[in-house]
Length: 513
Ligand code: AHR
Image (cartoon, rainbow, N blue to C red):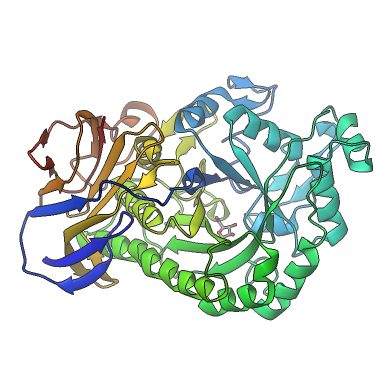
């Protein structure tokens, strides 16, 4: 383990020049003020027609014996309300470029059944469609983010979808919506124009997609005061060429451009969610932290064309991606979620805080039962909140808060996937004028004393998420609460601020009034 001098402008670690090694004691200087807001949408979620994310996860239908409100699972609904989800992306993912929205409106029994060709060949009965999604967003109090079909759809289809969702007037699509039981327009703001158009969305070259984007966006209209935030399909990981071409050819016609980055060290062999060695643990975290440099790379390209930072970078898919759990459909991407995933989530959120000036949205993949989900459900009516859920819940005060820049000495560790910061600290002033600090100690064996200088006020709530083993996870039945937040007591006020003793592999969130 070694220490480096790190300036943390936004929240997470980034590397500067080397300094003397100071083991087990880090001093972080927190600036009294900041000016960059953490968009609440950085805490966004993603729900795709994939496996049991929608069917069985969010939606069981009104006739189900599982307790529900108009078809939405009550347990999941409540858990998501508690999370204050700011934005939900739907219907995909790869599914979006095969989705024809008119299949999902009107009486459910009349909707066509189709095969979900992207995800396991499952039969899609379209019982969850536009109304079901947008009404869910209303119940959750979140912004909908609709991904339009560019890969196999038409400009007219997308134009009509926007009219259906946003027209208040006596227009053909608004009339159709009214026939289907909804009078008022929903007023959708976020519109994605294609998904992974370089891959499952059409295997396009950036030049070709840039022209398609220009074409489609011209018909994605602002209607009746419902102005769209148009999001162009962005790069796969660090593909800066894609971003460059898109910004050059169409930057002036978009409000946001996306980027997808998954924590996968080896796409041929993802590895098990719950069984991994210490080396694999550090490799995973190093892979996760590559996000920091990848975002910086895209930011530099975007700054070239948009120095005013008008266009947002939307990391609209991110998270860990493991082998599916034994006995489950390989096309359904169902995986467990351990303390390792929670640490990845916290490190990623700290990275997003650090880049909050450009990163305006991030959507973890996915909300229920798919990849690094918040929630796992089964059809016996049971639900489990994952360690990642608890991170999102603990970090809630960061939504809309103002980043307080930090300077700190950060210990690092080498791994086969590169260097990783063993400690990540993020601070912000909340919308209520309080201060919130998040500290992630990624070390497997070293407790870390963190002195936070420059903080004024009284300690309020302090919580910790940790477990005896980073492989621990929550499961149906007796182990549902194996990894849950607890009160954190090892923190005290000092003359300069406060001092916290943060145990190995843990996440601490401290509030100051
Ligand atoms: O989240 C699962 C899939 O990952 C999405 O459908 C796709 O966009 C990405 O490749």
